[in-house]
Length: 117
Length: 112
Image 1 (cartoon, rainbow over the protein chains, first blue to last red):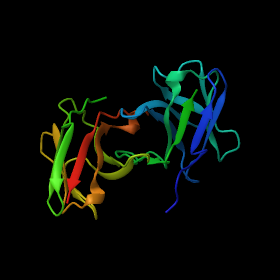
Image 2: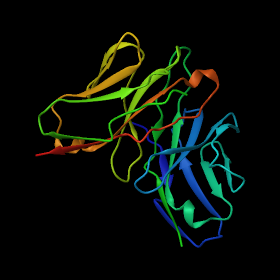
Image 3: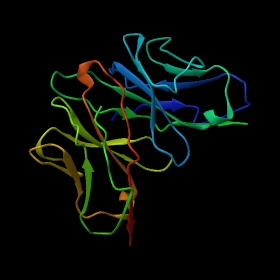
Image 4: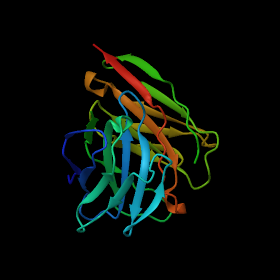
C-alpha cells in the first residue's frame, strides 16, 4: 500500500535557525496537511493545502511557518526562525480527493522529530 | 467543528472486547465520524469511518445511534499490540473546511 514518507526522521537544530521538513504524499492525492504533536500531548492541526494554496491554518501557523509544494511531489514545511517551543513531532498527511457526501480518511507519515537546542 | 469527548484512558486484557465511546453532541448533518489509532512515535492510522448505524471492517466495528450524538468503537478480542491512543474525529471535509481537530484521545492499555 502506498505510504506518505517524511524526511528526516529526526532533525536537531539550533534555536533561531531555519528548518525545512519534507514530505512525499501519496502520488494521486490532492489535499495535504501538516500537524504537530508536542511530546505527551495531542495532535494539533497546523495547515491544509490544496491546489497550490493554503486552505486552512491554525493559530499556531504564524508568520514563522510556510508551506509549499515545489515540484509536484514534495510538500514542505518551513520554520523560519525556530524557537525552543517548536520542538515536537511533525506529521504530514494527505487525502486523495473529496467525495460528495463523504469523507476520505487522511493518510499520515510517521513524522519528523524536531529538536530545538 | 463538533467537539468530541472520550475517556482519557482504558485498561483491558488480551482477548477481551473493548468498546470506546465518543460523545459529539453538536454533530452536524454532514459530519462523518472517523476513528484513528496512534502508536508511540508513529503517525495516526485510519481505523474506521461511519455516518450512521453500524460499520464493520476487518479490524473494528463502529456503532452510531440514530441521534448520532455519540459513537462507539468496538475492538474485538484485543491483543497486546492494540495498546495505543484512539482518536475520535467528527467533521466534514466537503464544506470547504480542511481543519481537522484531534481531541485528547483514549489511551488503551492491553495487559496480558
